[in-house]
Length: 134
Image 1 (cartoon, rainbow, N blue to C red):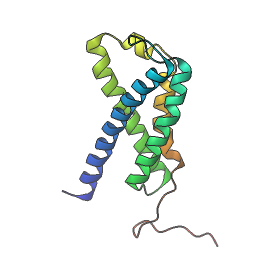
Image 2 (tube, rainbow, N blue to C red; image 1 turned 45 degrees about the horizontal axis):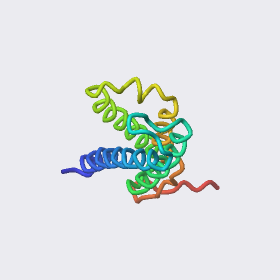
Image 3 (cartoon, rainbow, N blue to C red; image 1 turned 90 degrees about the horizontal axis):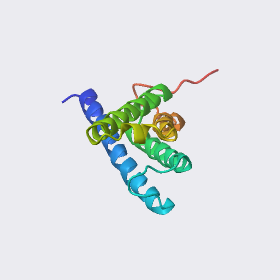
């Protein structure tokens, strides 16, 4: 396997790990906020969740060691798309898409996942030396 293939597998794997963290954090937040089992957390709960998921995607992106900020944000966007696809894959058969995606706060979580990696500083590598302005 080439390095690029390993990176793609690692990118998808970390995206799935972020989805699992999202579900665990949503469950924990529902318990803390006292939300009934049948309801998603309120909008302010999703804002808290967006910060948590933004931090998780930040650390996941640091693990990937992006060459530049553009690549880091690309990782975040891929992870947000993976999250949407997995959640849709669960919500459609359960007929809960309107209930879950009808809460505007959930979109903050996807933005948090996508933009969390934007704060990662790129690590210079031998193939990508730092640019020094003179």
